[in-house]
Image 1 (cartoon, rainbow, N blue to C red):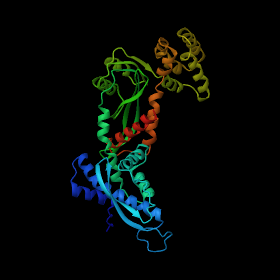
Image 2: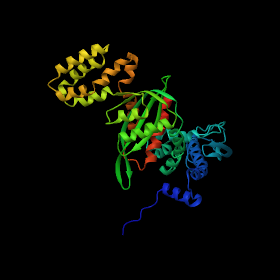
Image 3: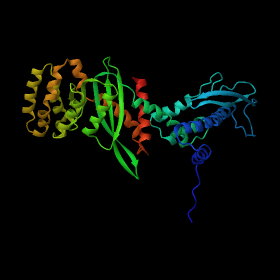
Image 4: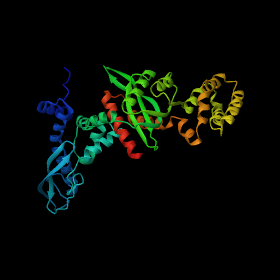
Length: 382
């Protein structure tokens, strides 16, 4: 007979919460967490006291100090789940200075913020639980970590539906793919990201959207949603080469200038060129889009087409899209420098990939709350 698997501490904790609180919503779970936080902080403080004294509370062996434990001080502290009463251990010499809950501090919600920050940096729930245990000597289940991080779901919903500014000078749009486990199988989902620059040059990520693939129709729905959230005018949209995306964008924002990403065009065209000629080919096309004027760009393009005529596939990519090079010269060099590439939003996706590369996500919420926490980290840097 197969040996029955023993329940983990996390599973026992989750079972106790369900049996005692019967949570039906995030609010119900917050009430349960409030009861958990008190014992959690007390256990962490005991770990600090052990470190301060140099011995465990139940260690009756040799002790490196004459200092001893001396009861507790009752203290009320504020957490994100509400006010919690805890017992802070004391020592006889009053030399114990708690780091988790300093003596005059009454707001301990930052421990939850630390959990969220670790999660935002791509640490798994199990890794966070192990880190908390290593630092404080307290075992916190990965289910509890999940419950703490779930508190951002309401903030995510508010952020995703917040009113936007009336006008944006630039929108940079891009997709990346992430694996989500759904209905007993793993599927790749497209994560749609839009980075906006307002008239003061301030950056803002306007939202995150998920779909099973990238398509013109989904982009149109997203642009229509932006309009519903208050966006009346967009000057420029920079994008890669999704078929029909340009027409879809103009159907929502009729006066927008849609710019194909030059870097994507280089990647598409260089496929037709031997690797030994990559560098020289890229230098040749740079003379075209980097020319000082439209006249100079057209002259450089003629020379480029002649020089690389042995690779018609590569040249044809630029002939079909040369209007996107020409329209760059309708604007000053400062504007051209911003609008010619989607690198601004690709750097955001690169930041996302750092925290999503570990594997498949159990559901859409797990992915979205991680990306939202990552975005809050980006906002701090900006």
